[in-house]
Image 1 (cartoon, one colour):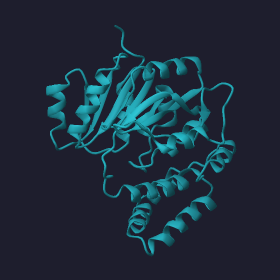
Image 2: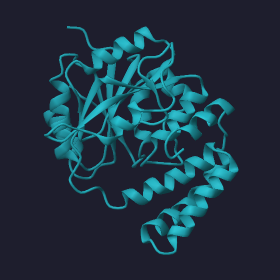
Image 3: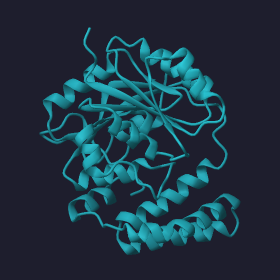
Length: 286
């Protein structure tokens, strides 16, 4: 049986138990995708587990935690034309990757598709599904699904050449809410980004979110504005965060980390083309 034209990249750190569950699901897929695990310098025995129980999985043993950039290392390691991302707590429904490959084959401008995400054992629809399906950007004649400027990294498939053309996930953000910037950069390069609910991913997040995640996401929302949006927009986002920081410890952390990373964001600032900026303003919270 031939391998799928969609490879799978998983970025992980210190989550050996949930990673093992994810890999068992992925290895059982009828598509038989090639899988690359980019390990962000785990210290919990992840690499020992992979070598012992999953010898068919390719492992990139990164020397330090590179956050979302680990995914780019995985994309570069693959040669498949399309790449699906999973987290160490998510996987793809049987047939989903084959369905995604057919959509990419039929639509040469499609750069990234966002799947419909089902959460937990009850397979509850992620609230983001409805938001993406109702995107005001609507359809395009040369793309499947609905045009969007957002997605879940653990439930998306990308064209390898488009991902690399756009530069992948950005180093300034590191991790947490990094998807919007990649969607902007794909659209700025002329690639389509769409929500295709016929492609299904499963996500089983831990009941308790990782500590500090909301602050990191707020930080990256503001940094994304400085990287790509007009200066008045970036200033307004920063001002709102500073106002919240007066009474919210999480906002204070987000503001502190934003200011630390701001020089890097300004050095990499590249405002969106006018048509993409108009699209960004039209989406919720844009």
